[in-house]
Amino acid sequence: MDSKDLSKEELIGILEVIEGTRNCVSPDDLKGILIKAKELVSADRAICGIAKVSEGEVKEMVSVVNGNYPMEWLSSYLSGKLYFVDPVVRFHTRCSLTQFWSDIFKVSTDRQSRLAIDHAADFGLKYGLSSGIYAPESDNVSILAFAGDRDRFSARHKKIMDIISLHINNALVKSTYEFRSPAAFPALDHKAFLR
Image 1 (cartoon, helix red, strand yellow):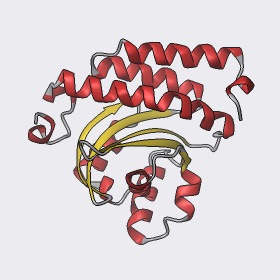
Image 2: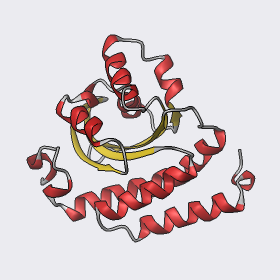
Image 3: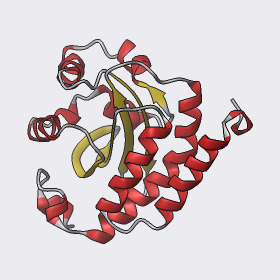
Image 4: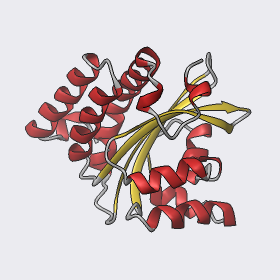
């Protein structure tokens, strides 16, 4: 699919998201961008975060900006360290492609993956679209994810995600590392965040 196939409204929305990322200076700014972006891909929920990786495995979660995922899910996800077994996170530690969760779940049949998948489904996070970007100089991977309780995601949404993901990644890095307030990430280990 070529960007010429996108509607005028979609292209305007994409430009608004990109402009928002250029002006983003805090996690709160980024939350607003995530909410706008989720509308572009017909999602119910949006979140992004940065994980420290080593040899293709997550070592720790560095930061999270929650657009509107359920706080109960986020709290249990972080406290239970489900990011170690989350097949979406594991996929993006190895691959920087935009991917439908359904495709990731097809190859994630181990018991630990099922634990993370079932936990998310309990909160209506059954279907999704995500993208990851690996930064080798810092051994970090940033992940942008959109989710919903119904499968509304299409090749059109994947194309939009391909366009906006790098911009949102840049805003994530800028807003979380420049903002540096532990209060913005109460569920995370503040020592890891403040490095």
